[in-house]
Length: 284
Image (tube, helix red, strand yellow):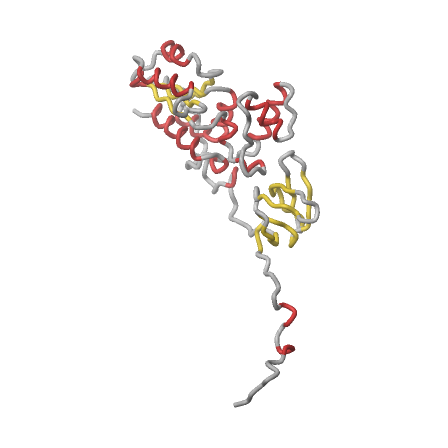
């Protein structure tokens, strides 16, 4: 036995790495929210150019930083690295040959003559979002989407349209939750004389803006707006965006819509309801 009372030779190993904290590597993928330690700037990754990563904060300000260490995710240090190259993708990060809704794209397909059936949505923003994600599918199916400027008069509008077999109506309603005004209106339409040929579905959000994943805007979640404040104005104010005029609100929506490239940017609570409506109005 060789009793080495002085222990092993410290120079035989890399003593400099003893006790060092290993910082995990993290690919700087689009929409990843990080904080740059030195400046405190927090934002979502919007682009990687060479060895620089561009971050956009919730106010829309964009700054570039060198990739590497010095970033935090949820307070934990990470080393940002160039993301691995993915196979060539179509719009919205989808695989080639897919529409924005994820359906198989039909090459050189002509729009079908419009069906008698319709899909109604509450407002212009709802219609623009549905068009951006499901537009290709709707044209192939011959489905027209119309917006109603609210659903207060939904029962009268349905009666005027006079649905029937082969002339169905699907309605997408905002804030369709138990006890809401919208739920009472939907129940009245379902119980009405056209109920068999009308499908009213909805999502739980106050406005369709919330159906866009907040991470796409560099947010952890959508701000909470007091009931006393008009919701869209309150959202813009909370995010530090101009909100004094209707033009400001329109620009805010264009900014939000611009971050939507495919169904992957939307919440499942909206996706399922729109697909359900399309199936309903295209059923034989």
